[in-house]
Amino acid sequence: MASLQQARTRLWTPKHVLITRSAAEHSHAAEIVARCEAAGVTDIDFLRSDRITGLRGDDERATYARAKSTLAVVVSPPSKRKLQPIPPSADWRLDLAEGCPAHCQYCYLAGSLSGPPVTRVYADLHDILAGMDDYVGRGGVTSSTTERAHEGTTFEASCYTDPLGIEHVTGSLAAAVAHVGTHDFGGRVQLRATTKFAAVEPLLVLPHGGRTRIRVSVNADGVAARFEGGTDPVAARLTGLGRLARAGYPVGLTIAPIMPVEGWQDGYGAMLDAAAAELDGVPGLDLTVECITHRFTPGSRDVLTAWYPRTKLEMDPEQRSRKFGKYGSVKYVYQRDDMHKLRTWFDTALQERLPRARALYWT
Ligand code: SF4
Image (tube, rainbow, N blue to C red; front, top):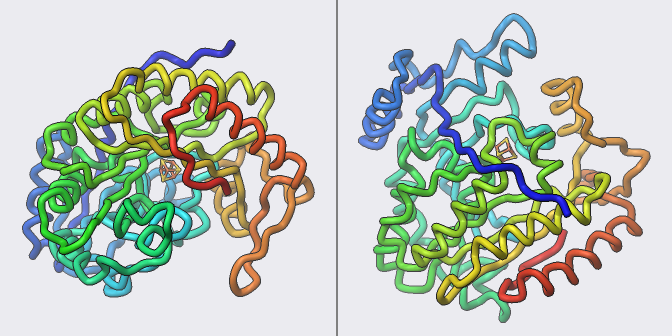
């Protein structure tokens, strides 16, 4: 039986911090700067305009390295303030930031964000949170379905970032959790976030009111160790999950991206056993599971192979089945037989190893 690597956690500290002129007018920018200074960042630059420059290096590698080590503090673009649906995870996407400092070789952001992969955190956090009120009671995923209506209107904060991965230099996730936990929305609301990091300490003491569900994004150790650079080990993420559950948070596992690598049953089995051990005996445990198989688009494949030219990640369109989205966009997913094998195994393994978990979706 495979076992998980020993836990070890990390806190990302940017090398460079850029604050745009408009962002500097928001109090949350001052908090971010104070956090960065406390974390030892010395290269902090207040820009004269709202244009972020200086991210490009001499070649693709240098640009990648510079962008991944930069935190830009910006005001969210007006388009972000009009929330978008985000099925099957939640009613609405609530972005606190965009970009992530980790180096996952399959990162789904590669296909959705353009330009150098800098992390942009939004200084207008208070306006973003105030904007949630208008969406309460609306939405097509949890608000309007019988099975998930009890979750209330759901807001997903990790579509375009890993909010816990940047928390110690931003404080944005804690502010959102406390806001959702204490604000009178006039209806049920749930904030959702998923993470590959383990530094949950600042969240444990917050007045979360049971209204934030934190999931850890987990994988077989072999997949995580090979493809998830700059993240915390799966064992550490699960320890964090146990601590959150004991602090009364609804929690979850986002098992993603599922890959049928050699020995996958052992690897995923060990991860599920470790999750069960961490959550054993948690009173009133509220645990969900989301399963997402690996997929890629022609665009994400191009970006990822440029970022990680030596990757061993299988992204061969010939081995995959095509799935067409809106407007003719294509995604490459596993072939029907592989998908069936994976799904059948996970259905049984989850029932056996985590019988208290509620499965939300498989994709
Ligand atoms: S942690 Fe998530 S958002 Fe960050 S690089 Fe990995 S997959 Fe991308």
